[in-house]
Image (cartoon, rainbow, N blue to C red; front, side):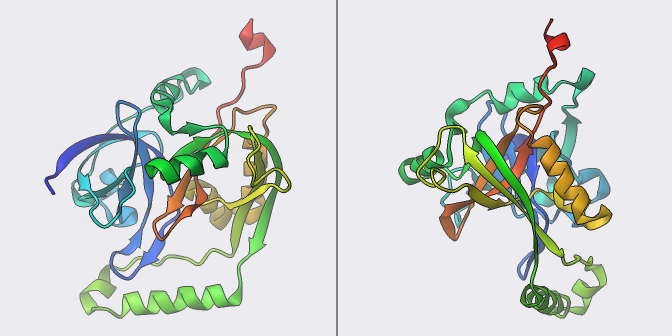
Length: 265
């Protein structure tokens, strides 16, 4: 399939996952200039040159083609070695206005509930969506098990032992002691959250890196702060999993502060 150069505004990076084929991968979410969502994969982000290691709300240009091994319409297979970071959309004067212009440009992937997103997945194959919560009920830390730690170590060993040349360039990927889970209900209650809240793992790299570096209570407090619906316009970037298309996880977070009464005057 022919390559074309995509210009993408990055809005999500998931924490790196080990991969036998790619060493490790980062699932990246973004929007094109017309506001349409895309998934870039595989990206060995930590293995790119420093000037190529994009952050959230960076503009990147990357050669890509529709992924033949992934039927999800948003998925593109990228030639990550040729990624170029060409700009950034910052929050001048503390507002997210310019970011909003792109993220909200195409409402076709915005949903009031997980139920509505899953209907779009069934009918259109939609695999990404920006969903609006109506209530945040809890932020929880789950201690990961000894079995998970052993599986991580076994995968590391298998990857490192593939070739000597590969070993020389391998970068250690630390096992995360905790998962961060968000318990929430949709703005328009769907059948899944009528009786009990959604309980989803947060895969956002920034939040998990905060926990790894500074302690998991810091990550929990951060998520509690930005998910306060009274103070922040909090929304969730959800993405499904290739092998389990009916299951969605939180791959990114939208959390501009709500304006105060004085700012509205």
